Image (cartoon, rainbow, N blue to C red; front, side, top):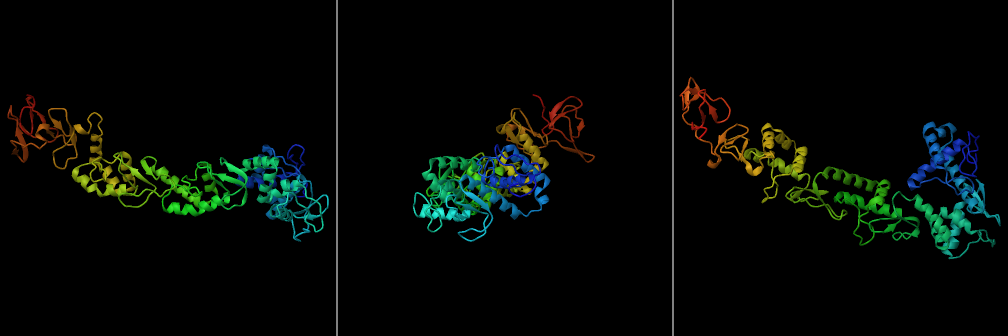
Length: 497
């Protein structure tokens, strides 16, 4: 292999007309670049063959990545990670140097800085050599600081010009400033690099390539664009901005981060926000909190702050900010903490008034709490849940839910302590809990119990027709004697006519 100097184990082909490498070296290099490509959002891996600008076949990417995960080639080769990092950098520099028309020698000492390097790049016409970082710094000084159209060799007294390909194919990969400089002067380079960097951009994020960031003023390979407003800055500035803003947004219940451009009223949204949540822990924490609140409040008609980067709305009860206000059907809203507290405080009144559900907290509002809001109260407050599950409350709730007799046709039972009700529409109204009957025109007052006699300790009455003693031990007010006479038990008046 050109990388690990190891015997081939069934050498895979990199790309058409590319050199072969042993399976272990190819597996390691592809797997190492997969992690980098995932971080950068790249779709394909570039070949590391000398002078090759092609991309590896997708089938080879997938096979070697799977092999790296399943068979543990790195442990078998007994090489430290630093060895493979160095080998991959050597392969990369050899590749780019060949594309720049220069000569590469692996290892050794740099003639310019005197330090150990992955390799030395030799200018073919004058044979002066230096490491890639030294060539990059030399070109930056000559082309950027000196404002020259071309660059000469670094060696004192050498008048040889450096090839333009050395800027475009080699040093631009190690200097964003050189890449932006070359893009401004070479349309072909700008086009090719633009295609490469757009493919490597985070998924779904619009980018501007090879420009200076308007915030830090530094050159950048890519500027990430906030699609909602069109403002674009480098990833470093975006990350620094959300790292600073996200904790404050979390404390103030802001559901988003505002764009960093001064005066912009739009929030950072879409694919850019998703990408920043992946690279910024603070943004990820804010996004998780917002998603959790949205999941809890999605069943309600919740009132969120508009725009989303503003502080959360203030609850009219506790006067504290929150993610969103839970709105009742009447339009009044409170935070998700105050609704259960309000319902719990009303349980005693509900028991006295024989009502299965609290009304709205607004002083002049008589609207009942909606099903969704009441469900929230039961979920949060055990006191409200116990009241909700009481048998008499459950029965009352069922009676009130009768679709054939809406609320205007429902009348409370007049007997003290009874949770039942009756329905209007007949001459008599009967409670569907205790079966007490009354005349609706009499206002529902309980009638006086007439002609009650006590016989052998039992309260009885005589049939108005046959005078037979009758004991009533349950049922409604309608009584039928064995003589077939029908009458009202409470008044002894005939039931019919």
